[in-house]
Length: 253
Ligand code: ZN
Image (tube, rainbow, N blue to C red; front, side, top):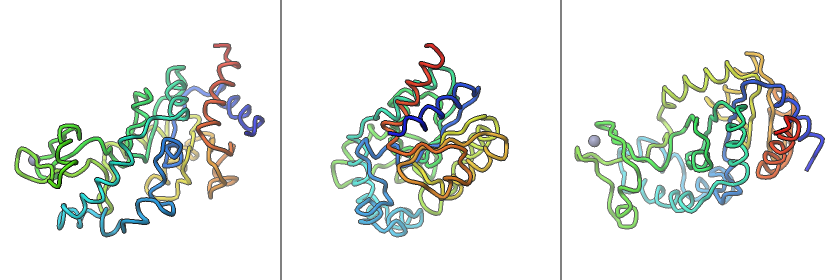
């Protein structure tokens, strides 16, 4: 691990008042959730245009649920890792004000983060496309083990409360994340190359509003050296806890 880079990140955080994190698939890899886009990932086995498009769901929910059950198997056994926990600690320290995540795995909440803006929804919820009623997935455990579809009390098929291709980003999440990006003085970009719109706009908004961009990724991305003011290379499972420990030393807490 690059201790110099970690120390500089901690110094930037020490001088900040309002930190916001933008997280992506990379932060959850060490929790056993491979990036859906990576080779061998979910989108390698299920063509997302066929299995994760809203039109496919409406036309053939039973087929789409074969993919959803696979996705669920991957996500349900996952536990937060030290990276998620470090962000929860940063919130407890009063530094981190919000996490904007592209993940649907609920691991930030499981780790103890209280303000989580879900850009792509959350797989632990089901929503009715007709009456908008929201259920927790646990209420439908039986349906996930059998070859049945979860049905709303109104009679309509329930959809996982995740953003399918062809669906808009939830308006509230979009507005909240723009607001957070405009308000923060440091934005942590973690485990994402932030190349997929509209999430990719978030670091740009932050930068334009005067925030420093602190990037945590395993490898360089298009943000590195251009938008990012500082880059901490490595697994966020190691670099984030190391940063928080260093910050605690600096703040004497
Ligand atoms: Zn309904």
